[in-house]
Image (cartoon, rainbow, N blue to C red; front, side, top):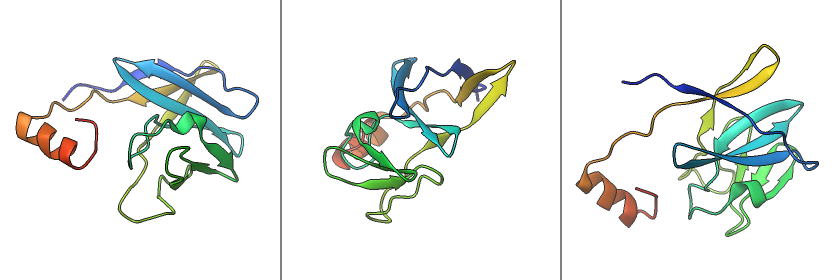
Length: 121
């Protein structure tokens, strides 16, 4: 399996969030308790843009269907059915970088099952 890539993080806006793309995938950056947290940009429920959601007290609320995720753990506060994927953030020479693993390659049947569940695939 290929090693994760270290990707520089963009500066967050005054609301403590940002969005970036890498290798055809979108990610969100949030500042939580003074630390950068990187997640998938799309909500696991129905792919809403999390970087556009309401963020308060370490919780992001998806603007599409209001599913709430704890940015410290990735746990969905709305249902146990979903979890937000988080990525390791490291600091090298003063720069913040996210460890982004390569996208797993799915078979056609895995893609169809993911599509049926409403997930990107």
